[in-house]
Length: 245
Image: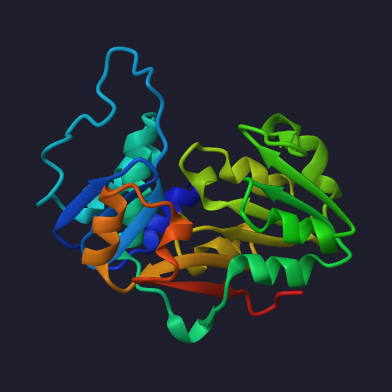
């Protein structure tokens, strides 16, 4: 069983999909809740459509869309992760309403930190971390290419991985590189807020709960980047493993 299979198996019930929005930066699926995922795609489709059932997703079973999460098409996988998030109602009593970047700056102070994905909080983290490595598929100044993960992650005391690694199929490999004594965090709006992560060595899960679906879906369609939301229509939640270091 893969991590995605375990997450899908943990879901309770099913719902009819009310709406699907694929924006340039974010994808939203609205069923029981509204789930988000970072829009990921390539223009090379090798004779197939990027979303085989495009135009006929609304009205489907949300669980049927969840299975898209394992698709070789990155855009279908994006929709699948958003569908998973649309069926998750996080245990808010187990969550803190805290910005993931602030938490990582706090936990990473003086430590060797590896971050998979270039997040807006990287400059603040760089000021406090003992050593910081940023791994990125499209490296910016100061970043390392993602292919360096196997060399870097085992050296880190704190590892933060973008939830979009679920979409491109690299998440489980990245988690396997983490030392057992490191603090491991998965973060970003794509991240499913489920305790299943704790069975895979993750200590902190930071994701997003959409509380105003119509507002957020409109923003998705209009090309909003997450920072532009400014907290409108969403809550930033972090779930902690009880034995977290």
